[in-house]
Image (cartoon, rainbow, N blue to C red):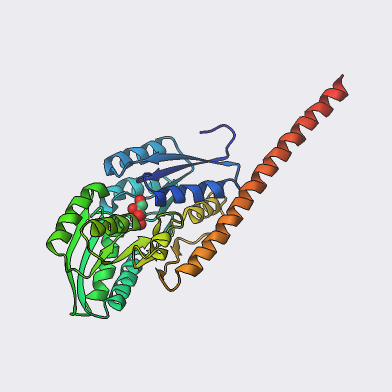
Length: 324
Ligand code: FRU
């Protein structure tokens, strides 16, 4: 445990290699600047469930005060998360789920709802008729399972909507890209592609472009920034994205309440919505505003740090003046 900190959080992050995860960690770190007494150690599992199990085991042995975890895959991670919970360590699950109720709190959007929203929007842009290709990462992760089921629930109500293929992979998107290319070459007439995240959606748009195809693409995540979901929608590269907030700030807020023995909610469902050409302008403007405010907060924080430093040197000088 760190010397100065009252509480130590162990954060078991399933992967760190994309902007969505980086945004999550940024949100956590910015929230933690309000809590100097809390330290956080991050363990990156690189999308490997065995590795993540060992990392959580280490957190248990280290007797951290709280574990935040984005379970890489639902089933394989369930037992170790139950073990931490049974050992009396509060566990905040973020984004992905396990198959158990044994956790202290959950923070994340409802991925079934995300899938349903994608289905509703697919039905709208296809005007109730057409063929669909679905692509997702990590077949055993809870978002993939839920986003698929939610989508099916909606499109199965309309027999005119045909899901030609669902392609899932535990491998990195660049491998998936070959399978995407081969499917699209064989089915150039497919009307719409439902991608489980905007990284995939963007990769699919590039494959379509290289094949000379112009397809409707729906993504998920809706991050702000160059070449992220909102940007892709505003440039017309994809038709829509379903907002999937990272929950970084909310995860820390919940953890802080738990550590301070304050009341908290077990289920913290984050907001989701469909972002398309009609509302993307509003989203862009709002994110721009948030970005400016975040920059102001950062500036204020560094000003406070500087003032604290000046104050403590002045105190030292004063002290030395009194002594000599
Ligand atoms: C980032 C990510 C997101 C996706 C989420 C699902 O690592 O793949 O794109 O929405 O994880 O857990």
